[in-house]
Amino acid sequence: MLNFNYCNSTRYVYGPGEHLNIGKLLSPLISGRILLHYGGGSVIRTGTIERIRNSLDAAGISYVELGGVKPNPSVALVRQGIELCRKEGVTLVLAVGGGSVIDSAKGIAVGTPNTCDIWELYSHKGSIPEHNPLPVATVLTLPAAGSENSPNTVLSDEQTKRKLGFKHMMLRPVLSIVDPTLFLTLPKEQMAYGACDMLCHIFERYFTNTTQTDLTDALAEATMRTIMLEARKLNRNLADVDAWGQLALSGTIAHNDLLGLGREQSWACHGLEHELSALYDVPHGAGLAVIVPAYMEAVWPANAGIFAQWAVNVMGVAPHRDTAAVIQEGISRLRSWYRELGLPQTMQELGIPANADFDAMAQAACHVYGGGVATPTLPGVHPITAKEAADIYKAAAI
Image (cartoon, rainbow, N blue to C red; front, side, top):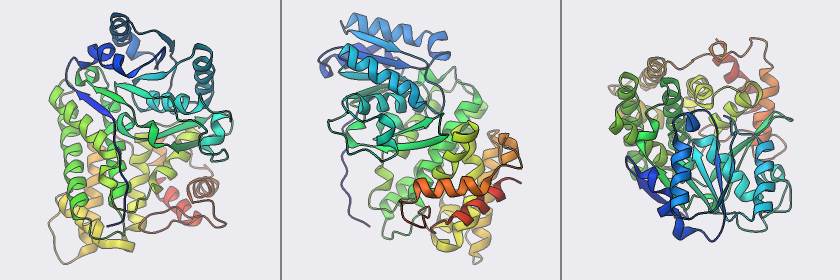
C-alpha cells in the first residue's frame, strides 16, 4: 500500500425531504450573497428550483441565479458565472443538479478569485490558483459522477473540442444534500448512465499494480456489487426510493477517493471516453459502457490476478485453474449487465461514424492524459500507447 494524505470535510446530509432544509443548513456557512446554479428542464418542471428558492428566502439568504448548464458542461457558461460572481460579490456557489451542474459550479468557484482565464487552469497552463476557490454546496438531483463529495471537476470547450479536468482539494463541497425523492422523475437511461459512471470510477482505482490493498479491495468490491444490484432493482422499478438511496451513496463513495487510498490509479478509460464526449457530445456513462470492456480486453494480461479477483468477487464467476477463462467470463457478464440496463456497447450504437479518426483521437487522449512527456501513455495496469489506444477505439467500434 502506498503513502496517502486524505481529507474529506464535506457535510453529507441524506434523506427524503432534506432538500427542503437547504436554507437552514446553508445559513451558518455563508457570509454574503450566493450563486444559485442549475441546469434547466426537469429541475424547473418538477418544482425543485422553486422549493430551493423558497428555502433560501425563508432563511434570509440573498442570491443571484445562473441556469442553463447542459451535459458535458461548457466553459463558456462558466465564464459567465465567474463574471456574475465578481459583479455581485458572491461568496458561495450552490449547485442544484447532477455532475454537470456541480462541475460547472466548481469551475465558477475556482475561476472567480483568479486572474487567469479559467481554461488556463483546466489545460494546466496557469499557475496553482492564486486564491482559494469559493466554497461550493450541492443539492444532488442525479446520482452518477460523485461530484457532491469529490475535489474534481470536468469542463468542455466547444471551440477547441477538448474536455479537461481540474482538481483542487478546496473544491470538495462544504455541504451536500442527497435526497432520493429528487431522483424519482429520472428516466431509466439516466439511471443507467449514472450507474455505469460510478462503476468505472471504481475500476479506475481498483485495477492497479499496487499490492497489499486488502481493505480497499474489499470496500471497492462491495461497492461495485451494490451498484450493480441497486441498478437492477431500479431497472425494474424506478419508484424504489431505497434503491435510489443506496445507489446514490455508492456513487458518492465511488468517487470521494476513499476507495483509492494507498493505490495507484489509472483514469485511462475516462481519458479515452472524454475524447468521445468532447467530439460527439455522447453521454459520459454511455461512452464508458463502450470503452470499458474493450479496455479490459486489451490490458488484463498485464495483471491477470486483479482481473481474476474482480471476476470472482464481483461478477460471481466460479474460480478454476484457467485464469483467462475466468476473466473473459467476468467481462462477458459485465457486457450483459450493460445490455440489461439498455446501455450501448459499440461506437455504432453511440452514433459515432465508422470513418471516425480514431488514430487522432488516441493521440489526443494520450497527449492530454499522458503526463505531458515526449511519448505520452495513458496510465494503468498497462500503460497505453497512442497505437494501443487507437486499437481499443477500433475494437469498440464493432
